[in-house]
Image 1: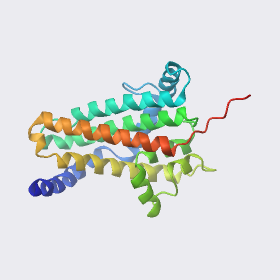
Image 2: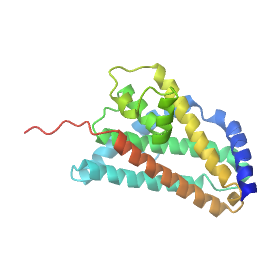
Image 3: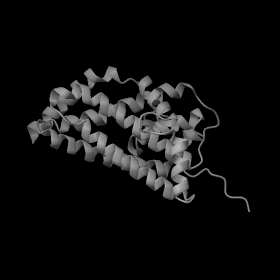
Image 4: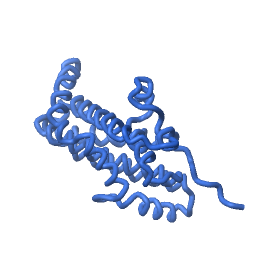
Amino acid sequence: MGIAKSTAKFVAPRVAMSAGPKVTAGYVRVLLDRAIDGVGPFKPVRVACDARLALAGGRVEDAIGEVVGIHVRYASAQGFLTNLGGVASMVVTIPANVAGLALLQCHLVAAIAYLRGYDLDDPRVRNAVMATLLGKDEVAKAIKDGRLPTTPMGLATSPVHDPALDERIAREVTSALFGRVSGKQGASVFLRKVPILGGGVGAVADARHTAQLAAYARKELRDRRLPPQR
């Protein structure tokens, strides 16, 4: 076990370094826009959420619960597929896993924000969605270190949009995603000799992290809908 951990720590950073340039901060920002506007299997967030809300009889939290369940299942499937293959395939699968998770998790958090009454056309809200991908602990650390000025909720409700934050937040999220994915794949480096086991580890890890991220988003992005008129 000690040898496995040592090898994982050695392999993961080296693979991440070689894969990193393929998925840049700018690309992750593009993924955010595509996730919100619709791409691949994902309909535009507004369209998907309006349909889900109708099916839930207008009950926002029930609709959010359904959205979370769907995205966790998507995360499990993509985690399985991008963690198949041997160690050599990590150079290809790490960028694929990063892009897949970024797209899926952006779509999920944006959906929660939309259903809670946030304007997805507002750049402050888009920065908040992206910052949420860092997760609770990393957001707290980034604020403490001065890398972020405030929480996702604070970003979404800031009086003005600071364009300088766009690139900074994208860099933070890109770095965090590569760290998680390369660490996960490196830790399972020996399991990857048996493809199904490697895929299983990826499926569980990505599904669990996506569920945790959804819980953080639901807690952080508080409801901003206006109360119904009496």
